[in-house]
Image (cartoon, rainbow, N blue to C red; front, side, top):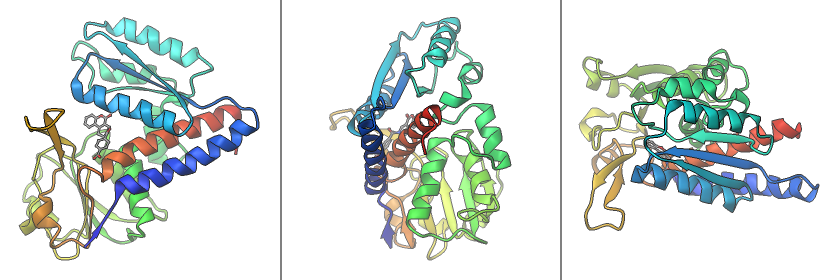
Length: 294
Ligand code: BQF
């Protein structure tokens, strides 16, 4: 069994970006600038945005957090988005999800300038991805594709099972893995809550990607020997003894499944760190497009 080290791979990617940033800084260009907007103070969301800001700064970006109260109206948020769209010093920004239920997320996402949409959630970017045009890819699918590439895991002609059809992970990933290109060409099954006899599908799969948000969902008796496991689940399990009060677990019963897998990602330290690295990569791409750099 080979453990797929997302933390190390993410560190490699960040180093690559950092080197490029340093190069263009020496030519007199300003640093790339990533802004994060958080509405409310959900502890996990706050941890995520702070981590994004800290890692952006580590590689030489400017980064700041706009924190708004939970009661912020949709219109106020749309006004802030309009400012960010017009601010030539902002290369990319993210609206941290989930938003409070009194705000329409889809409407907010549609207001983001697609050129600054470094989360890749705007329908224009998703549409470009669908037709195979260059676009900002959603960070988690992008990170998973990058892990598979960097570990030389073949996808061509493989049976891939994705469990979970979210707009942020499962659905875009199903498109990327089935595209006619290197790193694609897989036969993709997209399973979800209405799928009948999941075990029938999972026992046939060469690669299984879980993105459903259920701790210990995928068990050893559901997979075949030699399977590749990518666990994109990030679940907070209450753990009063820890500093934060919770610990992260994936969707896979790692103990059992790792005994049968040829490759497997851990949680934490698998897909999660890659998500951040690819957000930074998207911001770097937005910056280069802005300044027309190669
Ligand atoms: C790790 C996220 C659910 C809902 C909203 C590293 C992250 C997580 C785990 C992280 C996530 C999950 C993020 C690990 C960002 C990924 O070591 O395993 C990093 O910061 N993530 C988010 O911004 O919003 C979410 C999951």
